[in-house]
Image (cartoon, rainbow, N blue to C red; front, side, top):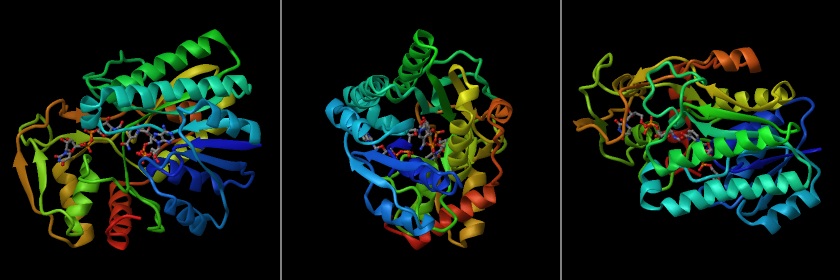
Length: 336
Ligand code: NAD
Ligand code: WQD
């Protein structure tokens, strides 16, 4: 039996493949990725870490025929679906590209899965679906979205709930990630954004390594510990292990279940900058600028459901997250 990982050469997908390969009873891994935001160099790095090979197929999840062929050639048992576009700002500039790639692509994937009677799915959702609810955020809260990217995650969640309601054979975990950061401790794989990073950690890491001159801190007048935004940063390897646990516990999930993957703790922008400075020994120049539109003061998870349902909780602290980010960035200053 094989496990299909869409978007498996991406940041979270690659770390998840490494954790899956570490299992004693591992299944064959088939990665489908169109390489729109990743590189095949990741495959060599995964092999270097795990000493195991994966099957890689360059394909677009929006291509029904190509996806159908993947399922015809491989005996797929379950799917972890990471593939999608993820830049919030870009999604407002190119909404159709986001709705097509993320929503239509997922519908096509689901149709192919159904046609091949594969009804086990772990999906990459996001804490962005909580809109402006007050933290700690729990899975029973009402959902909403403020940008096209967030809308795609919300729409896909609705599709998955409807699908599971229509056919009780489906088992679906919608994992709502908080802020994934860090890298594999080997320093061989990590986050490799194209162009100027949108997210805090890759930005800080590129300032530390000298690729960018200065960080802009978006607002220091929030009602938080030091006035800067607070987020629930989670080590990408903890997140990857959350996927392994979700997969192992899919049988316990009847229908579709939304589950937070976060630590339950919040860290401010300046706490990140100061910890990064301390660990890297590098100067990290920054300037306080006005708030970024759409940002909330504080976002962190109620992480209890994942513990109860999946027997999973994050174990890596901020020191590990930042040390591993720095190892990856300093050993691969230009990425892959
Ligand atoms: P990533 O861009 O590194 O990985 C996504 C991968 O999907 C890339 O390798 C890309 O080439 C591939 N892809 C995109 N469209 C495709 C298509 N049509 N067909 C085949 N492959 C395609 O992103 P990531 O950070 O690893 O995120 C993975 C998933 O998790 C995404 O769905 C993202 O929305 C979600 N997510 C990410 C974060 C985060 O902060 N990184 C937070 C919450 C949710
Ligand atoms: C974190 C904090 C910023 C950059 C986004 C998406 C969300 C999810 C994760 C996918 C905030 C501050 C940032 C910078 C800064 N992605 N910041 N200077 O906004 O919590 O979430 O990524 O699902 O959907 O919205 O993460 O890393 O952009 O910001 O001061 O250059 O850092 O204001 O307080 P965010 P982030």
